[in-house]
Image (cartoon, rainbow, N blue to C red):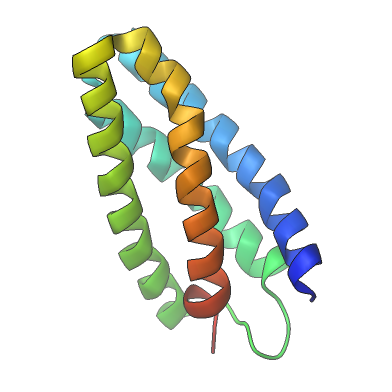
Length: 127
């Protein structure tokens, strides 16, 4: 699959992931869960969906597969990205407040999404 088609597919699936992730984070933090924990719960929800969809749809073909090695790589990348996301969201929450953290999450995740695409294409789903 070409870079353009992979990018478009990753963008659509990422949008679905983001809606799940953001919705879970906002709901749980609104119900009183600490924003960092709510962010991790949201990212787990989105990641479960995204690993499978991207492995089956976005990164398919001779040089990309979905298996145990790819899952281990995905988990490693996800842990780093979740740490970065959670630190950023908690910092924004501490400095600007909860509503700004909710509003900033899409921007934080968009930046991490670009990094995630490159990592997925060149490392996670590779044979």
